[in-house]
Amino acid sequence: MTRPTPKEIKAVAGVAGVPVDAEVATRIANSIGPAFEGFAAIAGTLPFDLEPARFLVVQAAKAVK
Amino acid sequence: MSEQPALLSLTEIARAIAEKRVSSREATQSCLDRIAQWQPHVNAFMAIEADAALEAADAADAALAKGNSRGALHGVPLAHKDMYYDAGKVVTCGSHIRRDFVATTTSTALQRLKDAGTIRLGSLQMVEFAYGPTGHNAHFGAVRNPWNVDHITGGSSSGSGSAVAARLTFAALGSDTGGSIRMPAHFCGVTGLKTTWGRISRFGAMPLSQSLDTVGPLARTAKDCALLLGLMAGADPADPTAAALPVPDYTSATREPIKGLRIGVPTAFYVDDLDPEVARALDETVAVLKAEGADVVQVELPDQRQLTAACQLVLATEAAAFHKRWLIERPQDYGPQVLMRLQNGLAIPGVSYLEAMRWRGPALAAHTAATAGVDALLAPAAPVPAPTIAESDVGNGPDAEAVIQRLTRFTRPINYLGLPSLSIPAGFTRGGLPVGMQLVGRSFDEAMLLRIGAAFQRATDFHARAPKFA
Image (cartoon, rainbow over all chains, first blue to last red; front, side, top):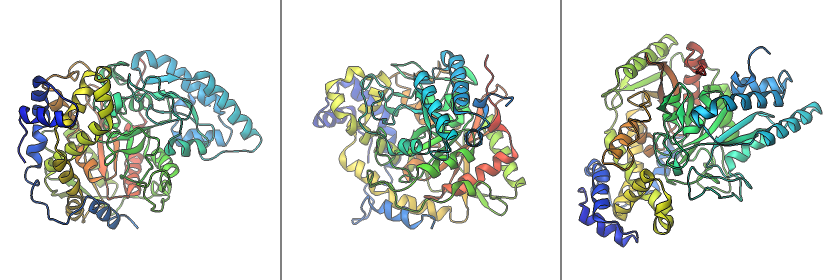
């Protein structure tokens, strides 16, 4: 996962129905860029049959009885 | 009684009222007197409902005189973060957009406290829509730290931290999505419990990020938090994400010694780049826990920066989705910093969000494996003591997210993993600002954290110190 560019952010925000101008897109890119970089080592590596609900299974399994 | 009733802890005032040593009216009037003194200086309250509170206190006293107690907190006056729906009351959520919003339902957490006999003092200030860690609020003004009013309280439960520290309320509900209970607890010198995701129903609590939001108390002691948690925890038909696990006797847990427990201190991340006074407080906390008989060991954790990043992707996306309609229809009604942060979520693709959600299970499993040999972790709640209001007033400038990331560095990984964490007062800087430490436990093991926190508070007096009115 790579840090999105202001141009990409402008496009994604437009598709989301909340258009932003170039200045805001640049500011957003700077703000959330580190999150994309921090998650880059995980993105694209997860096994096929892993669902978000797995979290609840792990949480319940480790819960204090 | 020689001292002001408002200076008692929640546990103490509840007992004093039950034993008729203090009336509910005396307790309520004592809080109102302090509110009148402190509110102009700390801005902790959103609304003060003095007449209604005294009327409710008189009713509580009359009921008790007839032998009718409603529960463990009969006649105890409390105020909570202004995001808990209370039917018929305005619930602003710290915002201009909901300035006149009147709730039609009552949150489950609040209702359970009411059922235990609490009465309402008013409502407490907060960061707009609970989306910020400093305590600034563009619409209602910054909440100020009672230890030094030039400094922030931390957020987003800013009013809760300030009001509990200044002894304006015996306890307060907060909420913690990225650190919003633990940071005010740390910066204001009170005890704050971020509960396991799913431990307390979120029904009727304003949403920010449904996968991360948790309800929890700020109070003066771990014992007080135990009492409140026991009253609020448990399944709720109105919130299917509230776990149907048994609710332990948390208060009993606070009486247990900690001799023989193993407490882990991370070898990295939570001990990196600490303010020297926070580092000193950590060392001193370790020494106290060892003196109480705990075995303190080092623990190597998985990469916490990845957890922080995943947390940010989830939080930003879910917050933007909740607010999308208002982002389209009335963006001008948000404060600049909150608008900026909400806009961040618009740029995150659905696949990225879902990858961050899919990784939660493996990430929690890895954390659990890494901490299998300890009963709890110990770490600072934040790397620094409270900055000034001026230096953290970053508006929507380019440094805003950097400041936010720095303050929430030690809290966000815990939110992503959904784990419980108790922030306890653990010292003061030479300038007189509080420093807090967080204990992090296994899923649904709040009892262990409260046990350790209570033992620490039996051995120290940081939690018992109150700011002096200047």
